[in-house]
Length: 233
Ligand code: ADP
Ligand code: MG
Image (cartoon, rainbow, N blue to C red; front, side, top):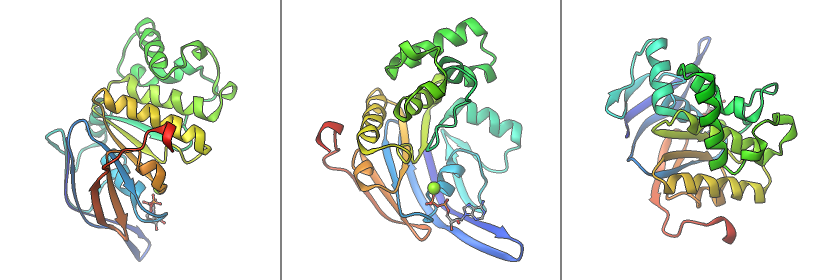
């Protein structure tokens, strides 16, 4: 599904250059639930943004579902993004003046699905995340955990092959974090490939595999033997 070979990325600021990813090699198969772990500044978001085609890289190769993601023009990148990828962010990134279902339906709008079908599909995914009764509410009427559930429903609405989550529990208390991870586990159980960036060990242990980034390289890539279930953490 995802294959990365000797990936390098630097940020240039004037005459300075910061080498953030220094030769990353890893691959993710369909159906995996992978945590990308590492302390703040280790390059997790940089890696996820490259995987999400939100940013480019300097050298190496990134292949997604058999397509080499390199030097794509913005239109092509946007097309692949819509088709392959769903995003979940720490700060939810919901549109405040749109209801829960309208937020979920937004990716479908870009896929040119008509309004009636958009609403139907949005409600279906709100039901998956347990928020069907909240379909007509605004984000300001929802708790943090509920907002993240709406964001997860939105990420799933376009039926992407891969979900990419950058610190999805970063703005939530522990209990709510575990509930959100429980939902992510459920979605993965149904076969979705999911990558979760986190700096929290207990969140990483709720994934099936942990890839540990440090100073721009992978220092550990291990299978989680006993995946944590939310009720035990
Ligand atoms: P993490 O998500 O693990 O905290 P990031 O990938 O966000 O780490 O950042 C890795 C390093 O790259 C940090 O030192 C950060 O300051 C730097 N960095 C991130 N984005 C940019 C950018 N757009 N321009 C310059 N430096 C950046
Ligand atoms: Mg980050």
